[in-house]
Image 1 (cartoon, rainbow, N blue to C red):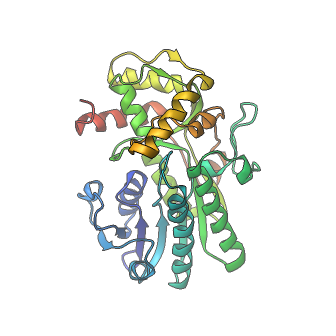
Image 2: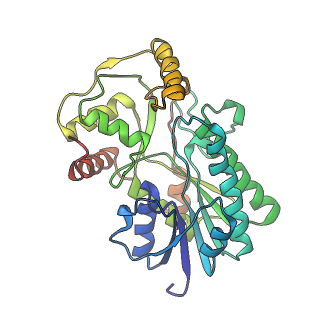
Amino acid sequence: MAEDITLVTGATGFVGSAVARVLLKRGHRLRVLVRPTSDRSNLEDLSVEYVEGDLARPDDMEEALKGVTYLFHVAADYRLWVPNPESMMQANVDGTRRLMLAAQQAGVKKIVYCSSVAALATAHNGIPATEADPITEAQIVGVYKKSKFRAEQEVLRLVREQGLPAVIVNPSTPVGPRDIKPTPTGQMILDCATGRMPAYVETGLNIVHVDDVAEGHVLALEKGVVGEKYILGGQNMMLGDLFRIVTRCAGGKAPTIKLKQSWLYPVALISEILARTVGIEPRVTREMLAMSKKLMYFSSAKAEKALGYQARPAQEAVEDAVAWFRQHKRMS
């Protein structure tokens, strides 16, 4: 595979850097597209070719795609609140469309597009959702989720209408090492581990080790069918159970006060007003509270059967996340 070049976008980030590691272990010759200002610490020990650029600039994409055989598009604007929703739509939807078209023009043989379970239906009557469950944009809550839904639909359209050689993966909620930002989930684990979360709103989610998600990406390249979607999930659990695992790993006491969504709506409203006027990112918004009413339970059965995908228990993901945060002195 030495003659082939594999390009990864978002490789400096949490999921992208994990994907890069798996690809290197598989023998891929790796190129990564990075912004000049990106923190490259997640890649400092890896042998990769850097191309500086931005997905908003067509010339940068053309340069990055020269000679590329395989593309992993992992880059995304992942925030649960943004002051300007249109900027997120441009990054996640328009940026994806431009990159897909540029990759096809460049003759890329196969593409793995990293979508999200945010683009899928949620559990119904407690039954984990699958790739086939119907969903419309009107049913989706939150700008980030809507942006991932639109981007996924655009990739599927290009597959149908223009023969784009793309496979889609839908990670659930990755947890583990190298969460440098951290992600919203990583921040939640960090807050719990350091005792900065006295209360919470109960909800259900699916926790998966980031390295298992990365392995699933590469399996999708090797075995995935063009035009198909594959959920890369792990263990379904309630948020309170996740916090108990976190505190067992980190020490301390898990939060025990459960708040009703309705109690927090005034707080969310005030937080949003402050965010827009002062620029302080809110820890709770009305959209977050609406999302918490839905159980984010998912089934990875399709990926397990078709790709040979496997996920370890959620506790291992949490253990690795806490160990990494501690090692990098994030828990003071």
